[in-house]
Length: 172
Image (cartoon, rainbow, N blue to C red):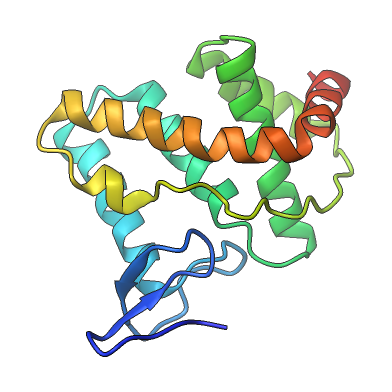
């Protein structure tokens, strides 16, 4: 259930951040409330328009937002969480460059893998997109995205590390 407070904020059921209570349907299978989805859009706009040289940081932003907002078990959310976890595994554990990871993910998806639902960890990270929004410049942005990524990744990896490795190695 969504938790509201008197300041017209509500708790995002994906990441737990307290965000503006905005009406709307943010995404078909990403599990976020509209206020959080809007913040994600602000981060993406900043990465595209203001910090246009953030290949790796942008890849991490997309991956970590998806795994921190897994939604509910259905084909698209299951595929999304699994493929973004594989991406994080390839970047964080295998140290593969972003441009190669994107190509590897396309190759993996072309094999039409069958993924299973992975229950999200509780908590699903202690850092959220709100922490990234505090960045005042590109250097801080990179640091905050990396901290957010490591925080959420560690939660997922502690719970599903062997599964993530097996899936990544099976299709990679």
